[in-house]
Amino acid sequence: MKLYLTINFRTKVGENLQVIVLEEGSVEKVHALKYTDNGNWSAEVDHFSKSISYKYQLVNEQGYILDEEFSLHQLNFPHNYDEFVIHDFWNAKNFPENYLNNKILKNKLRGFKAEKISVLKKHTHLFRLEAPIYRPNWKVVILGNCEALGNWEYLRTVSMSQTDFGIWEAAVELPTNQMIQYKYGLMNTDSGEVFDIEYGDNRWALPNSEKNILQIKADHFFKFKSFEMYHAAGVAVPVFALRTENGFGVGEFPDLKGLADWAAKTNLSVLQILPINDTTANYTWTDSYPYAAISVYALHPQYLSVENLEYALPKELLKDFEAEKKALNDLSLIDYEQMISGKWKYIKTIFETNKDKILKDRNFKKFIKENEDWLIPYSAFCVLRDKYKTPNFNDWKTHKKYIAGKIAPFFSAKSRDYESSMLHAWVQYQLHLQLKDAIDYTHDLGISVKGDLPIGIYRYSVEAWAEPELFGMDYQAGAPPDQFTDLGQNWEFPTYNWEAMKEDGYRWWKNRFKALEQYFDAMRIDHILGFFRIWRMPMTATQGILGYFYPAIPVVMDEFEARGIYFNEDRYCKPF
Image (cartoon, rainbow, N blue to C red):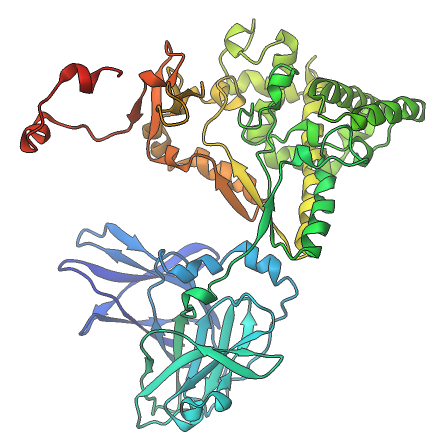
């Protein structure tokens, strides 16, 4: 099968385009494109499958990649043609319509069903538009300057079929002696009315007089007018605030279902929650701050529903549990210390009672295997924290320095710490099941969940213990003085060692986002500026006023002189 790929892309002298054909996610072949004229590039590719995944990239004379496309082109080819001319567009990261390619829209349109399209031998063109449309009663149509496309008449448009989520296709027979101008439009399927067409200049298609070649116009994105762009309303609630009579004095993961039901009734599309990572440092009320997690992976045990565990409470404890539960639920505020100590008491009892079954559970073992990179250090950290009554690993009698080989035995049945380690791992497994169940329920209602990622890590966390080289442990992060705080803020978190993180391609951040992605459809990044610069201060500082932005571009003396500004060292170089 022969493919003729064409794309219009403006380059500089010495720059070239390549197309990368992928097979099961890995590079199969790299093809160089040839420049013709007016920014047009083309390549001839022999391909032996009825589908293809590929992307374009820009390289310099040395072959260094200067730019590459945001996402893959994916095409399926009809069986009755052997040659295809494909007219592509570069998929830029900053296309405003790119935001529609997200999990939130897929949740909203959860009932999507693919339509079939037949491409006949007489067809000259296949129009393919990548355009997720956010209303289920909207359909994409095509109209243009020829009879086959309705001569621009709204009542004679060509309907397109949604062959995959956000992929609209229509096969047509166009005149062989005419340049085709066209646009895409939107039809209300309830009324049959074409109520709008996209903004901007007309699109163009070349005539096709070759009977054995199909031209594919692989267009990217419907050009929405600003008022048509997708908007969603939602609600932001910390999970611990979702208190119900089913909880144990605090909101729990199953309570997200009730919030989702309410959101569905009020036509809200997104639920946003605060961070839900484990903050258990001292088992006191100070642990209730959600932005100081002891692990960027582990979920907080406070959100675990004891009554929704895979194993039930022993009957002899039910009366005490119900009494304690009612007392906590009757309080006007969350009693964090009573709640967390009570939960752990019942969790430990259930684990002890069913220990033999739990440790043989295949699904639990699978969870451990899939998450061992963070789960083993976390469980060991929890055991050592409880053993030495502090999360400050500098004060532990053993394992002050994390050494993977010395931590691995915590998960060995021969270890005295084995059962304690398994308890913390099992709690994480149960938290995962309960959160995933709540998320799946929410998605089934067409509602999405947005998470919250703190920019900093807790100084006495698993990450600071296991990989201190990735952090500026000798510094503290915070915020400069402003109209709210005259002395600035000191968050006491270590900063990031971006140079070290860059060395392995930011593995730490990629793994963190990958873990969050299994639950969340979008993320709020708390203090996202921390990716670019942070207000850091020495460890001796107690307030934020003695900090400075890092990294930062320095101001040099010449800049003062060029602007006629007198340089006052005391005023500009000392806290004021």
